[in-house]
Image 1 (tube, rainbow, N blue to C red):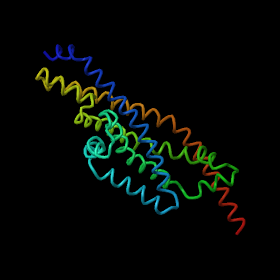
Image 2 (spheres, helix red, strand yellow):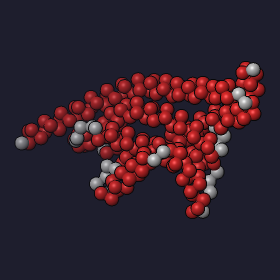
Image 3 (cartoon, rainbow, N blue to C red):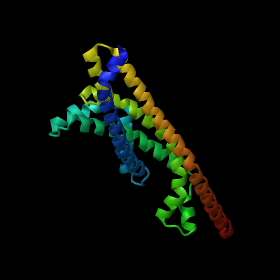
Image 4 (cartoon, rainbow, N blue to C red):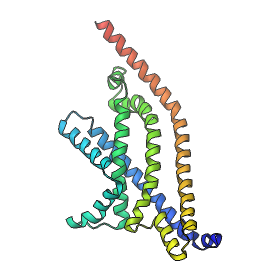
Length: 238
């Protein structure tokens, strides 16, 4: 019976899986872009800007994702903004993960030794070159593991979008269960697909982390040379 159900409804599961993948990809891109912006805002000298960044991350990290989702989907129409379920769900998920990504990025930047930009300037680098050759090789490998964990969480949290009728994997599983009264087959299949998706993300992140290791090592070497040179100059001037 279970194989008959899967053979009959596999196009629906495939459709839900593809929509889930699209939601995760779009939310990751938007969420990470917002996270970078919020992280940079939190590091500027302006106290008001830092307060905004702190409030943004605190609020979104303190409330359940489903509440954020309901505020976007059911709350925005009161202000004249009625979004389709897919758009509202993707927007809510992007906002949710951006707060966590911003803290990941901010923590990676502030963990670097002080004087990194000054060291690059001593070597004649522009701010953009310093960011590319000194800061980025140290920050990017550092943010991959926590960003991977957040992406795995985001993939699983996307199932909450079924509560506003977004036709992703969980919603399609609910339809199959309602039509067949076979919850084990419907949700067992969706559980296996979620496991496969998260396993692929973890595998890809592991490969990416290994590939960025060489870039990180070269960047750390340049940074240490610059820092050593800067320290030598200061000692000589003293």
